[in-house]
Image (cartoon, rainbow, N blue to C red):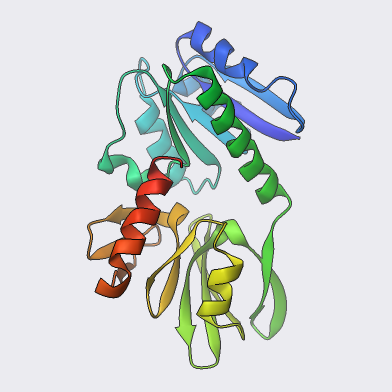
Length: 235
């Protein structure tokens, strides 16, 4: 079961969005909340949370800030009719940014991709890596970036604000091929980056959610720019 929350003070909009989850190949439970405090009081874990920006009291952006500070790894999707995407929200790691006036066919496509991402997370698509002398399963969505090592690669992960490192014998080139359809892009000879974990990008460096800054080399800048732009535009 995929757990979905919709937080929107306009009930008609929330119900219309909820209708897009009917008759899907995945089982979905969808809860609707009319404001941020109602959502917070539920204290339930959701796979994906749809947030309207402009709500009375605590706005959707403020709620997203609070959720990230609390360590949530739920997918956040802004669903609004009033604001275009702005660089200031990147640090909240929104998975999608949907406008309410999008054509229905576009919204259906986006919903399909969002549910597929939730399903992928639940399947815990993973890599096998070494940590603390043991072989462990590392979920793909938890990987922030992968760093070149002398004999393979170092996997850097972030889950619930906890950072960990694992090692693998596979090279960055090999992992790049394996992860090319999972939101990873090479920004430098020394590392692959999970775009879902980027909170800021200014052409020469990227800042990851754990606070570390990584340089974007000139050799990879054009390819990285294109990949990141497509990621932000949900293409």
